[in-house]
Length: 168
Length: 130
Image (cartoon, each protein chain N blue to C red):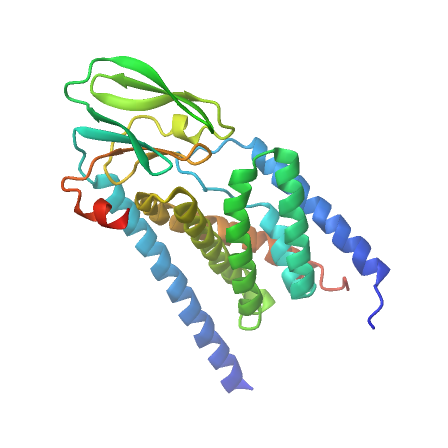
């Protein structure tokens, strides 16, 4: 049986806290676009970092905790249901892409991750509201997802490449 | 060694081209959506059920409230345009969407499952999907 590494556990806890803080900082930024679902996704900097530095399982755990606590603290359970569907599709895709794309091209992983996130969100919204016309938001989500994904991916890439001496 | 490096470069080029193509498709889609023509008949739906069918060209200026068990939205009709002026949902996206301008872009309040959109010219598509 594998014993729990205390140092690893502690740093994952800190990263979860960091992701939650970024999530709440982002909630304070008003959304200038009249389309539901458009976000920068600052908390994903932490998710991408954990996927590349830690293991896939740990990234899934961190995201699950972040989403659960985020919904409890922000009180917006419905919006979080949409983003949870997106997050898990995004996680699956990113964990797979990690095998293809190395750290120096991390921002590309993030772009595809963001696109998958928006796709999952869209699918959840379509299922919940039963309104096929919602699909018209999808092009906007693709454009914003590419830009936001490239931004958060670049942030994570810079952090990863500058902290190569750090061992989890 | 050199061969591996070149192979890697090609791989990233292909991936970047795919990303750019998706991005371009998104922009093209957005332009199509923003340019879709508008009509006069507006339907207000909640949870997939039609609550109101309004003809904006003959509707007088007024405001009214839509109450569902999920919450309240106040809708305003002015000069033949419809918009949501207040809502008790936390994100207020429906309010910030402003007036209904494009038939491809309905006003949506996801927390209340409320949709305000132009009616389709013929109800063929909607009748099938619902």
